[in-house]
Length: 208
Ligand code: FES
Ligand code: FES
Image (tube, rainbow, N blue to C red):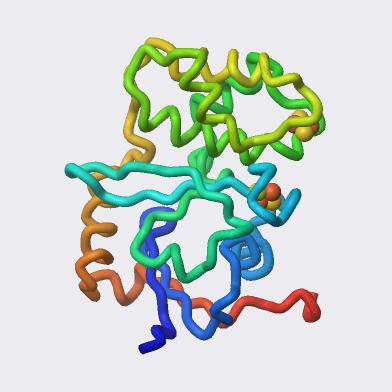
């Protein structure tokens, strides 16, 4: 059976998307449909990490985030997950700790790789035990290419952000996110209504 509708969690509420082509990538959805262009396209084949975003799923009563390459992830694979992009990190007007650390450590030059690197560090920040080793940071950044900075300032930023401090929940409304994601995974319709946004099929590049 072909499912025509997916639902995922985004910015504290459920999003329902229907009528999209089955080969629509998450990157195309973000850039062409949501018009969120912070997520970059570099290689478009899963090698450079410029398109990295985070997907969250509930395990053990909290949301665990993993980095994914949006250029090779089909939109349908986001079904049931929380989607976090670089635009969401400072949504309250305050930089996320990994963003502040990147600024402090001068971890960005041309900036094209930076959103993807920030999202990889975001998942590391919320996942890793403390203290964090340089090797763990190198592993977390293995999928992100930067042609400008030589990586040392980026690794320094990661160590600064994730060093000794306890990790915080990403959202100030983390419990709400857990409840929402759990409801989605269970197929409940509790968020249909004012808290659900509906999108038409993503725009094709020809229509831009
Ligand atoms: Fe290079 Fe996605 S654009 S990995
Ligand atoms: Fe230019 Fe990384 S800052 S590619």
